[in-house]
Image (cartoon, rainbow, N blue to C red; front, side):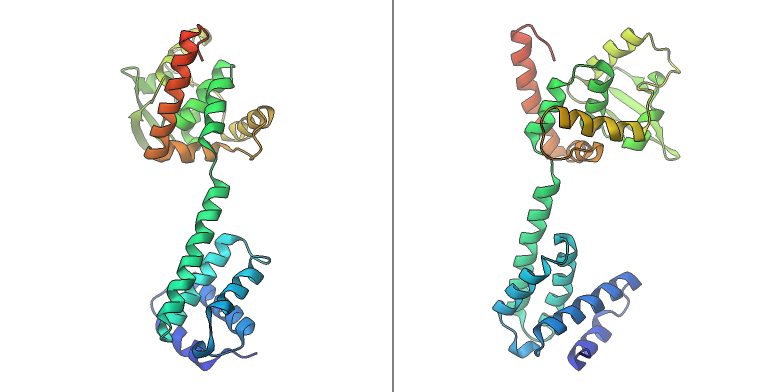
Amino acid sequence: MPILEEVKAFLRSYLEGKSESTKEQAKIALTHWENFTRQKPSDVETKDVDEFIFEYLKRLKSASLSVYLFHIGKYLAWSEKPDLEKYIMNERNKLDVEELAKSFIDHNDVLKMLTKVTALRDKLIIRLLVFSEIPIGCLKNLKVRHIFNEKNYDVPCKGKMISGVFYSDTSEIIRRYVKERKLKKNDELIGIGERAIEYLIPDYAKKMGIKKKVTPKDLRKVGKDHFKRNVLIEMYEKARMKNLRSKSPL
């Protein structure tokens, strides 16, 4: 079915100055919308939106459908159907929340990894992912000499220096690790690269019975979000104090 003249007119004004990828996305989204509804915007109702979402959730990932709905909503607003645009955007927000919920690792699972891993190097790697702001690909660059005043670091990363602090007990774990391994100033701190870490983290999660596949990037998401990290630090410190009282430090 050829694309409606109304859609063509909307695209001409809507896509002016947009990137090529945005133009392609909008054209595809509205072609699917027109082929599915087979009616003019003036005749579209909320039930048509519901049926479209129900059908396309079978064909697309939530994130892709969210993009479709964004462009369709703009088209309906242009077609003087602002209530429908509002309805579509509300439904789209639900999809985004569901997608985020599926992708985000639970704080309790992160806490389990922080408290149950006993191998000192791996314990340190998990803390560096969660309790520092060093990108995964730059952890291998971290040398003993890049750490100063115990809690601060200044590490080379992608052509520049990244500075920050270690949170919670990370500096304490570093001291124990450096002493145990007898590391010198110019030695790499953890000695393994990104690929090895990508195997290490999911393996630990699986052994601990964590149902969701956990990746280093999942742990970094927690570390990069100040609110989530602060919540986790509070949870971890409570668990740590409890273990210290029972004379079994984490």
